[in-house]
Length: 326
Image 1 (tube, rainbow, N blue to C red):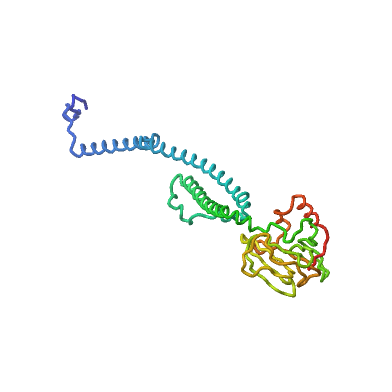
Image 2 (spheres, helix red, strand yellow; image 1 turned 90 degrees about the vertical axis):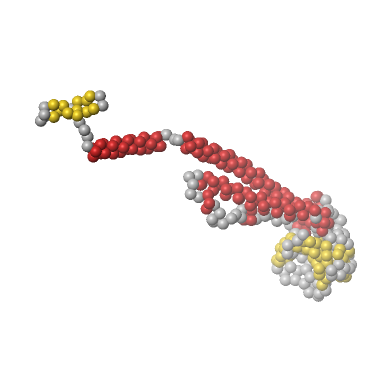
């Protein structure tokens, strides 16, 4: 077979001559199909290799966006760290300065760290290649938002306490209940002391002020008289004043009452006189400071009428052995 321009010839052995080659329709069809399949395979191979080894412009743009998002999340996490540090400092100041100044209990850590949202809150962020980054940042943001709400509520409370500061200062039991300038009337202190009746060590929940019968007894802070009780046992004749802000004071073994139940009193006002009623071994006043229904040592609340030196002396005397008078 030989070529002559666009025609094809082959050598016919029977006629011993060259004859023009004419392909059948079937042969031309098969050749076309073969050419199409070969071209398709080559094209697919090229596209596959290009997709594997090279990014399209759109893919490159998307990858740049993803990297930019990752950078933005990294910056966001750094800023969240800074916000957390500031919030932690505010929390410490709130618990250890502001709330102590106004004698409010610190907010429990369980309340500050309370959970936010439900278990399915972050389900919409799952299923992506960077889901962990997005979920972590969102959780941290939600936690900060929750803590900020708690802190805002706390500051509202502190602000309310600040507005009532002058009232609170006037209400605190901040003086001695009897005139004790020479610091000689306290006969028994707060704590475990020998009981004069039962001759065993018992907890003494207040201070005993030994004083002559009829000595004036003063309200140690502004408040409302909630109890005026007459009795021949235990505390004997006694008065309880509610000062608000969690404080109450009790005055026991009274001789004469000078106030009535429900009456409002001011610090320094005479409310009774010293007596020898109830379980008592002699004329004296048993005085208690009660904070949130728990008796506490009254000597820490005489800061309005004693000097620091007198307070130190009182602390030393409180450690010495003594017997109660009730």
